[in-house]
Image (cartoon, rainbow, N blue to C red; front, side, top):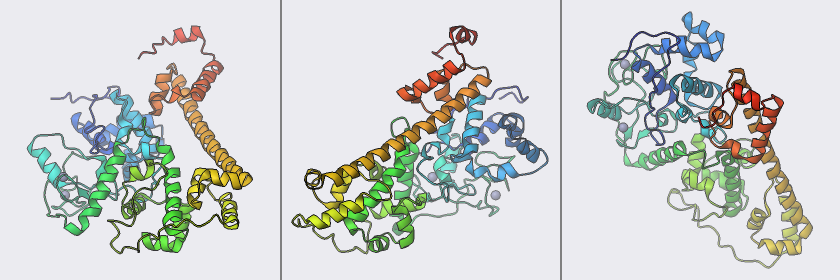
Length: 454
Ligand SMILES: [Zn+2]
Ligand SMILES: [Zn+2]
């Protein structure tokens, strides 16, 4: 059916990834296996002849030509968000003339979720899904969500995923030189073989919570939701809960979360950030979906001691309004003006339990101080963000120029995988400076034969 001859100059078919924009979007490693399969070549050939030469990492070529395994051994991170995932999706985009392959990685979550304990070391799959695709002659692939360590079920089939081939009882590497979608590379049997692992009711709540929350995260459209703020927002909320529900008693909050006190303290002051599994456990315990938790306004609506907490800590004490205690509030305000992560006056007022205007009236200097500190912090964070983006823009700009491509807005945005990023005035100005510095005047533009509409 397909042309079998293959040389390094040929370009790959524009193969569409499965499930784009859904929670079952294909993983990059699966896409690579399928591309090789559709071209009737080995995964190893795809890498040796087309991908490695572009990776500009000679040791990889050497390692794979001489039978080394370095690249394949590290392959689980292909679906993550580190340099190799970004580089590989970019190279494959070039080879297949697509611009959406970064969606097959966790690229958009890179500012939020730490890499540790994030990805499975070997393939994990649902035999029922594969069996049904086989029967209906659908494309067999491995969704990105199967690669996430906390995900243990297939929601569709209400069962556990499996990580060992039931025939040879071995685990399956994420990527190998020889691999066929839906087949065990060790014994060549189909991965639709079933070992019965249905869910029991006790585990179900938690497993489904995990699945649905990660589905939400995978589906995020980074052009609509600013994931760079997630980490900060998580931190703020955690602190807010500590204040509101535990009156800053880290010991009782840590008992509630079933987390060591010292660990929780690191999370609260931002020295450390919980891994994906812990983020999920916290949200489960708080009975909040991750996205709601992150995107909700500063209000903490609902009672966190409901549903998911079986050992219910007694109902939250009713807050009775005490008379304005000048000294206590002053002490608290002084404390809040030196928090590890600066906080806003809105937030400070919430913690103290007094109207912001009342506080401003009675303690103008302290309040202004807190507010200024917070504004400076927000400004610094946003400046840092701009600097980071400028760096990326410059890199893309230089790469394009070196390749003889005019570094238009669209081309740069496409290379960065960030649609519309250059619409932001500061960044657009920066791009114009780069253009000017590189002497892209009208004549040069013509030389590059620019067509901005492309
Ligand atoms: Zn399934
Ligand atoms: Zn097997």
